[in-house]
Length: 309
Image (tube, rainbow, N blue to C red; front, side, top):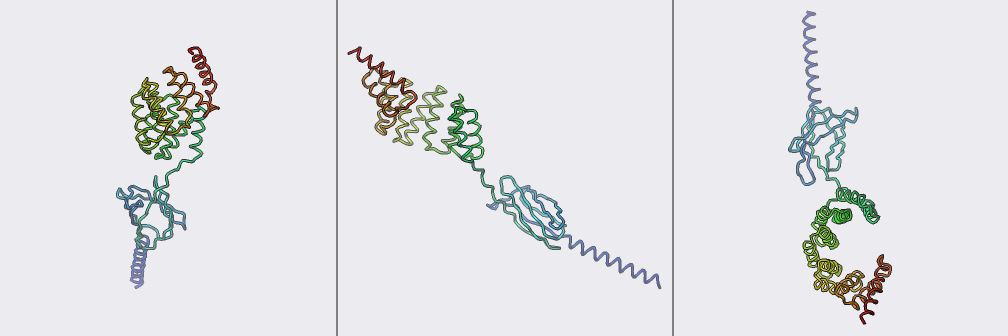
């Protein structure tokens, strides 16, 4: 009799243990399911997800599949901190509560990280290096600029000009072309690109660049000055004269126009016109670095004129 009672007790006890175990398994069999997406609804594949059970500071991780979907079962019920970190996106961090036996569903939307905006200080640093003649340092600064802001046309232009001054016209051409691609009406970039082709000895290509600039902005006197100087350097004096006179028509206040015109008249032996042009240059730019040498040219021209007369 006692044995029968013991047997019944053991059966009941075993049944209770099995029943308790099944409750525990159900309780532990909470699930977490969802998809990792960007703000446009596109799945982000192979992302690592970290869950931290706050009460025990216990963390574990698992990954989404190549379609951005994730599923994890056997999760202990409780309050969790959910962490997702994907390169190019803002870190995602959120508290969630997973109940016993629950399948917790959510789509994790990852917001794109803000692009790193180049600071004004960094750009200004490059400009300062350039003005100090520290072209290698300027190149490094402007390279940082375009890495952090690859759509910044001024960054490519300034990098190109620093490369040009460093004696690398080929790279200057490459990066200044990029500046124009980003900003097709960037007139200063056309000037720099034209100069780079000149330095490379490709005057015809430079001429075409300046002509494109004229087509974009036909009322920009500086373009005509640059085009005239190029014509002058390649002995196309009539075209140079036409360009300089057009520049004066558009803007009579540009000193360099008169300097270039003075050289052209000097070459053509038109002494009075040359003197007049150089004097106008000094009138507009009395503090120019070459003012003394221009005064010497005027003095020489006057002597030459007096000797002829």
